[in-house]
Amino acid sequence: MIFEWQAQPWKNWTRLRERLPHAILLQSGEGLGEFEFAQACAQSLLCEDPRPGERPCGACRACDWFSLGNHPDFRLIVPESMAPEPGEEGAEPAKKKSEQIRIEQVRELADFLAVGTHRAGLRVILVYPAEAMNANTQNALLKNLEEPPPATVFLLVTTQPERLLATVRSRCLRFALPFPPPEPVLRWLKEQGLEHPEATLAGAGGAPLAALKAAGTDPDRLVFIESLGNPGFDPIALAETVLRVPLWDLAGWLQRWTYDLLLARVAGRVRYSLNHEEVISDMARHCDPADIAAYLRRLAQARALARHPLNAKLFVEDLLLQYQRLVARP
Ligand SMILES: [Zn+2]
Image 1 (tube, protein in one colour):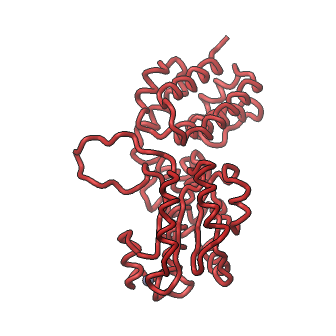
Image 2 (cartoon, helix red, strand yellow; image 1 turned 180 degrees about the horizontal axis):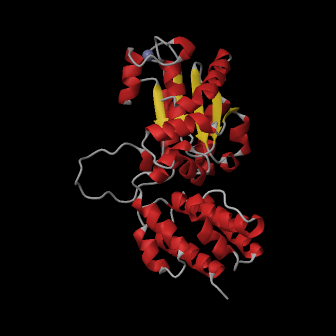
Image 3 (spheres, rainbow, N blue to C red; image 1 turned 180 degrees about the vertical axis):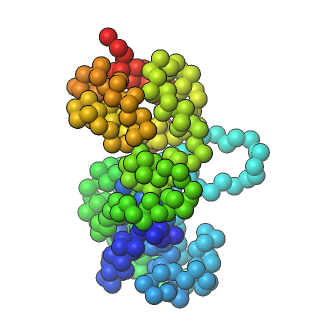
């Protein structure tokens, strides 16, 4: 899917295709529709009847296979937690699925790469998010990047390029997906039924899909954000409430809220939480900017760890306790 705010990046993509490298690192902010864009790129490389602007036709055999997830010359490598759910609704809740891309998933590419392509066209491997590979897994992939088989394109998508090995990065051509201009995004968010697209988009740091998610039926987020504004909350109960929310998202909510605390303290304004400006400004008056900055650093570390297996509940409790200490009135 190519979102309407991705018109310019798509033009850049078609230019890049004129001299197609064998490995591309698609670098993006989070929630910009980066995965959908990468999928459209992959599909456009496989489509057998492309439309003007190299857009995939959506009707040929290759496009059919692609949308069913079984094109013989395509491999999608994502963490187990993102893979489509087999099984039926109402079944036993599955045990927590891995947030990481396993090394076996990369090793399994060997067979795929050893034979010729099925459709006499290109072969495409999409890895998302690339930072979900640990160093060993990245090294396993590196072997393929160093000696790519013919007619093969690796598409790595990342929102955290600094977590990729320099050797992996250097084997890829970098392709940036920039933050979109607000007009088409606001129009799109209105079409999705958002009542306050401006404030929501600001709250999501300008990222359209993050805004949609935030505005949507995410009661966990509402409870969580309201609690941050009433710091008498019980951290253990709150951590329990948001147990289903990925750590990565939680740490992001805390990060934006805390960033606004700092901004309110030092510059008298907020950037993300426009609906809570008053509460934040009031709380910020009692905080030491150096303490806020230290907590922000802690959150950044937490976020970097968020995709690794650990005791999520303890982790969140700890972050919340630190937050309470930060905003406690003297
Ligand atoms: Zn097609």
